[in-house]
Image (cartoon, rainbow, N blue to C red; front, side, top):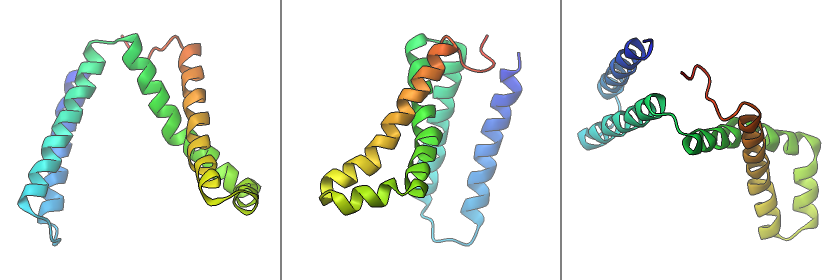
Length: 128
């Protein structure tokens, strides 16, 4: 199974990155270092659970999150380059324009991520 080498690599990478960033001359507290390492291991545990016990609800949530992050960001950049953002800011009050410019791209990204997931049957890449 390919997951075992990947999990070993992830754990080694988290520990190595933590040691590298901690020893780098920065003003980091030891508590922040331990919190970051603990949080990384929690997320590795979630990734392991999602990988070993696939679930359609969890896979749908992952597709929605994948849609929100890169696709929503691309939609936001497209809004900015098309001039739509300036038009909305110039013609609407502050809060409605803020809500439209910030939430609309992420909602569009979430819907697109869900649509992509639905077309793939909510199967994650390299799923068993």
